[in-house]
Image (cartoon, rainbow, N blue to C red; front, top):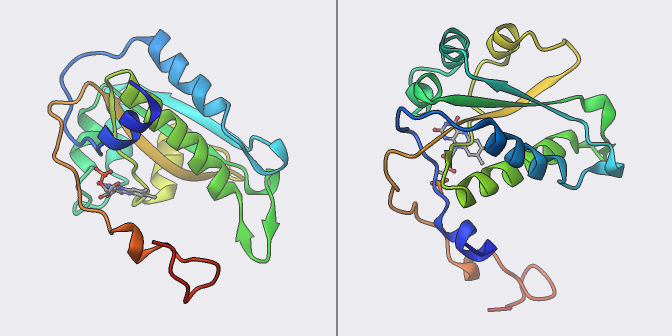
Length: 178
Ligand SMILES: Cc1cc2nc3c(=O)[nH]c(=O)nc-3n(C[C@H](O)[C@H](O)[C@H](O)COP(=O)(O)O)c2cc1C
């Protein structure tokens, strides 16, 4: 699978088969997250791998009932929690780059999971304190996102995307490129 195919075919997966994920594969995915670029190469991220059913339940209760990923978090074989220390990254003109650092690492993991035949779903709508309690995360870390990880029950159809001409400009805001 080349990188274009991985990007094209990846979907958010919210239903998983009842099959474990091999630790060697999890480590391979984490290694791609480790290689992500970051502010000043500070690598401000930490990853928590959760397999314990009670802990996954606890984490799922951090998601509001309306969050479509709530059941997936409790029902997947593995949950990966991505945290970052904001003071170990940069802030420039009010933009906090720890969010980008951790997001890039997470996306590396998400894309390589797909290349391994595994499903993920970015989850960022949750009550952070509940996830912190469930995983005993230190006060100075922020929980940036988490994802269930497992073998997808099915490949959902693609969600719509805007066209390039709705987002690309040539030379300046008013200019045409496409
Ligand atoms: C930063 C971020 C936060 C997200 N949070 C959630 C979430 O809390 N719950 C959920 O079900 N999906 C969440 N998603 C997944 C998006 O809904 C999904 O990526 C989008 O609908 C496009 O679908 P696709 O990923 O299948 O292409 C999140 C995605 C991103 C990038």
